[in-house]
Length: 212
Ligand SMILES: [Zn+2]
Image (cartoon, protein in one colour):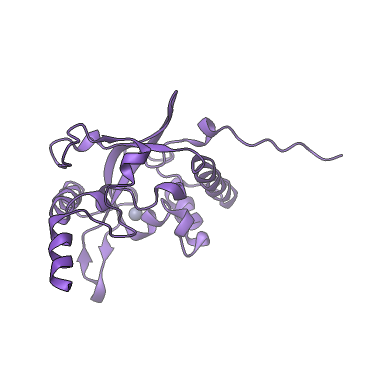
């Protein structure tokens, strides 16, 4: 007698992952993983470096240079305090025409909390679970289940074409020909990518000329 295992509905897997305003004793952070078909297609990859620097430094300043989830500082070489990472918070909306990845916010995170948002490429999943246990007061089993949910979410999303909505950054990010900062899945492949570093920026063009 085998039990029937049903795949969880995608909508049930799409829970908010970062809740910096949660009161003590409530969930502040869930694990997350992006679908592989949108890897690198993000603000950092699309913005000019000067635009991204301005955005991330403003996020750090607003957070008092601390992680907005655990309150910890970030350290660089020689244990010097450095700016926390600037993480893009995404909301995936299931619409009639397909899936839209909406930029819902930007948040300052320490490395440990940031790793929980990219479990697909985390080097140490035990460390991810430890961070979830510490921040949420969860049991190890809670954290384990949540990491599984994040993987299931990313696995299901990757089979859909995913449009991109960066309208949150109107006025801070300039993309020629796209004042509303909304892109179809096909359009977004022509934008910059933080993984391949294919930046259609003037700096990149100048560099190419110098190299030839
Ligand atoms: Zn943290």
